[in-house]
Length: 208
Picture 1: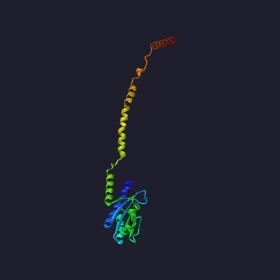
Picture 2: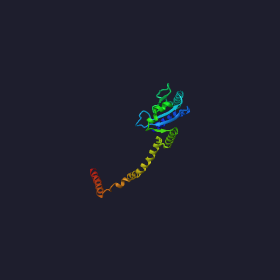
Picture 3: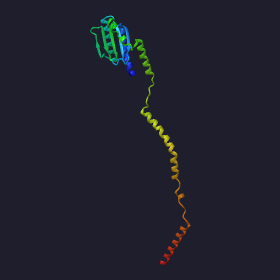
Picture 4: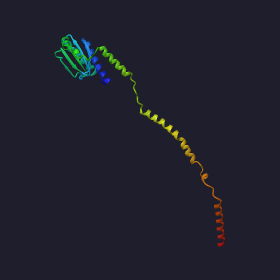
């Protein structure tokens, strides 16, 4: 059983037990049943009244209180007309309201020897302990989308600064003068050009 579901069942059970107390029910007992022996329900709430009319009044008070406070209805109710043994099935727990004679005769407590007997004080203590345990758990909050974006943006400049020296070296290489790479012209080529110019002038003068 999940912890939240168990808390809800225990709260319903505590409210039903309080209704029994308000209607002066006697010998109120709560049995936590062994799951290996009872797969139908988790708890028995057992009490008895002094008369059949009182038994009906106890069951009426339980039904009204759980309906008003929790919006919960019994799955079925049996024996209300006779009032000697009224059974209210709330699925997760079952309420048994007996007359004193019928309770002694059927002896449900004796039949469920493996069950754990709880008092109302024990049940309320378990409910309080479960509530405090859930409150103490730290709530893990996820980062909002805006916070995730800011974290991603902060990481980008670090990458740019790491690649900046490479770009500076590349720019330095490009800024080197182009004339430095050119080789000086050889003197032989210069003399050949002068001789060619002179021959051209001589040929022009002859033609004239």
